[in-house]
Amino acid sequence: MATAEVALPAVVDFQSLDNSVKLFGKWSYEDVQVNDMALTDYIGVSALKHATYVPHTAGRYQAKRFRKALCPIVERLTNSLMMHGRNNGKKLMAVRIVKHAMEIIHLLTDQNPIQVIVDAIVNSGPREDATRIGSAGVVRRQAVDISPLRRVNQAIYLLTTGAREAAFRNIKTIAECLADELMNAAKGSSNRYTRMISRVYRANLSPDIVT
Image (cartoon, rainbow, N blue to C red; front, side):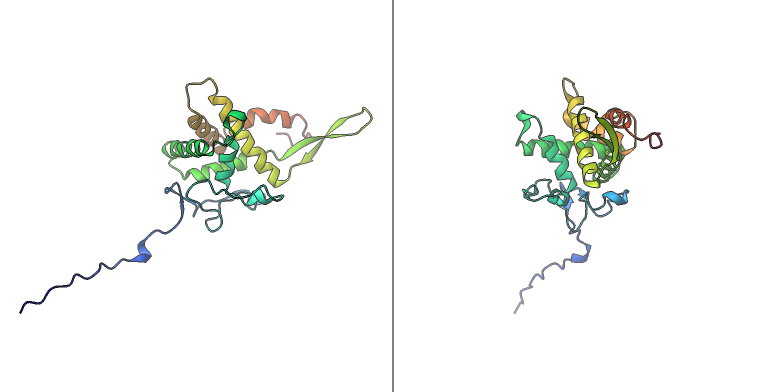
């Protein structure tokens, strides 16, 4: 009497599977480094805390002061693209722009786009600014240091504003302009919006700091 053969289930080696969360299913958070010690607590790229598949967490980061420092940095960049009334609330469009920009960055630099974004933010935030001192008509501008969180805020604002202005009435798409802005800022190129705008800051700095 013939015995029926029973098919055994295939053995899966779970150790070999990559279970890490990757942005858009492609970009890993594992090896991303923040090269400025002062900004490590304010740029959310930790693989344990900030790893997401898409930069759209629907978190309530504005409910309490300083909570936005916990927001993943790529999502903060995405949110900053939604500016000027006609773009308000169009987060899916902003996510698509960031995704295309990251693809372009990877093709041109062969680097992890998340690392390029982090380097761009580290290089773009001004370290010193000027405030108005005095009253009763006599007003002078005094150079002051900038807090780490404001450095990150200003960097994100300047990067997205530069990309938006470059794409306006231009044949290049906003994703291409954003990729150019991020790559130029990451490598410290002078051909970027943050460098052009920095002369406003530099005019008010103390003489021994300006180089």
